[in-house]
Image (cartoon, rainbow, N blue to C red; front, top):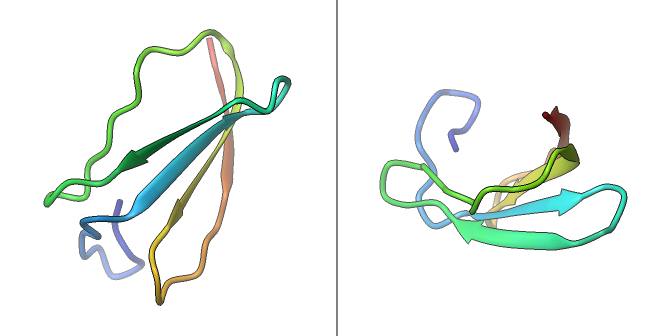
Length: 64
């Protein structure tokens, strides 16, 4: 995860929510701004990152 200038954001909370079921998983970004979720089933997911001092902008994507 990075901000609009491209700077990485370590320690951010990233929530991935499956749209149809509402089931959410949470991960935390590492020192490189990377995060990892376990494999998921095909579907549509909303992903949102949050960290104090930054606005949260969710993104919705489909996985196949």
